Image 1 (cartoon, rainbow, N blue to C red):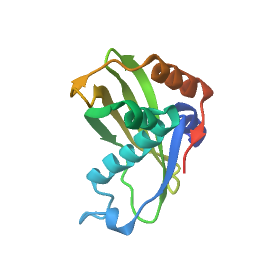
Image 2: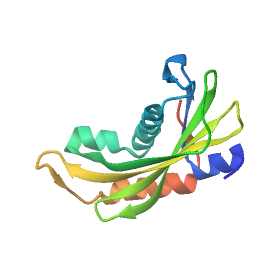
Image 3: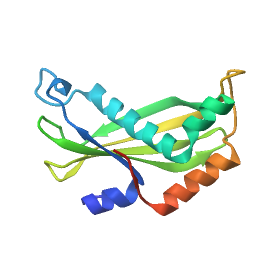
Length: 151
């Protein structure tokens, strides 16, 4: 993934986020913790696009983030506008693996890639549960559709 076009093809859900002056740390670049907030914003946009949040409210079945990581390729600095993308890489028995990307408008390149392992939980029992067929179908449809830009 080198171009913005390739980035957009890889991530069906994308959100535009301005880099804030307060996101930077004493070293003059965006603090590494901020990237996880970017990932969270894209993840929630993805969940909204596939109906996870509605199911959570209705049936008390929802996601938890079990594990996450980031690969920092280039530093971000203020001012900039980033596009943060989310996609599902693979389905698992009790959830799925997501991928995230951060694309800098100023640098015209990907600055960060990350993953997050999502586990579905029945919040009534507190136990993990398999994703519903409805959710898996919505994920498949969104991944095939290829674009659902969120704001």
